[in-house]
Length: 604
Image (cartoon, rainbow, N blue to C red):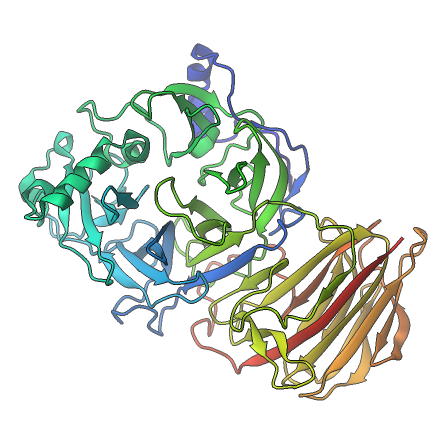
């Protein structure tokens, strides 16, 4: 099945709001100008944004504790939020036993000094026991807030089964996260009085009773920030006059003229010229797919604007980005997260895909590296962050590439490489243990279903000379090496097999190229002539021809522009098997491959 970017009124919400749109003929103030065809594959057959690092923060696990409280073995993890404060990243997320909106849904959080290494999650907001004996369901459309006085606040909403965001919930709670990592007491910042709840409905005092008056002032500042609190309406649906924008999962960005542009679920958008005190509803954004997953608007450090979303109707993959100079016309659609191994733990309402994206809201911190940082869940069971380099681009300068990783700090990631790094299949620059090679890029894999992946984008070309070295630390694991076209077409592929043999893929047929030894560097070269009629290239291993000597094409492509290394077969179509996948909770024996001396020269 193929999807297009044309926004059709496919959802029930879209059909229900047709009358509203007819009554509100305001011209759209957000337009998707990109006309690329987006396929129903994990990466949408889109180019990747160059140099994106995808890092798994939390891997759901039913049997092996991933939380400081070992009783929390949840496999529904979703709706993460992100902040950067005093030199640390903060991510929090909803956590439930199996399904969306299960009893005992809590809010957990983790921290990181660099976005790569994350702490073991802790509970930020526990569930509470309700009058009927059931447990509340935590929910969040917004969470972190850096208040005046440089205080980091976190909020969450106590809803109730079966729907925590239908307006019948109890109320919103708040607490402070201290610089030393400790947590302040939990207070109530807004009660859902219109739903019949009172001060006795929650076991916490109102924030105004806090003895720390500077904390009270910080909460008051949050309540006065109507741009930020516009995100709260969906859960509260209060009739007390506090809310004047009734849209779901709102994200806002400040436009060049200082006004605010908001995007919400189902491609609804609005604008404000008074810091969110009042809003002008604008209906559907033009040409933007109508999707019930979240959209995210942000301003990048180069003064441009970014729109991050799932660019299909209904499907929640890939996670993509479009950019703009004016915060109105967004184009140049690129993939952010395009690898999706199978869902390990099924559950009710657990959509497939990289979804519910959020970034760092204005005022909630600016990482010093200048990148665009995002957080999201995959399959509603794992939490990820992505670092997107700025400026956002899908191409690289038209010149030869020479990468040996020696100038990259140990235990970090190289610039200009696209990295997919799960918790149990990390990618890092490491000491090779070889004085001649010094530092190398390691793909390590202990995950039974995920893989580690590193991709180098090079200038689009037909003719090319590619050279690189690989050291397998075992002869029982798989590494696939692909040369790819602009939409991910595999022009040629090579593999280290689990059987201890090297394999060349020629026209879709894997050909045995003899055994390989663990602990030995192998030098590969691939030459594709610039003649556009030529569709296969010549491979050499340690200077010797392969069998057959020319490989490809596996899939036809006029040009090539990516070199990919991956510790397993490509997961190009998300899969949910309807039941827990066997042995998903235990690591497999570790596999490790080192990559070094990557040289890519376009041949015109």
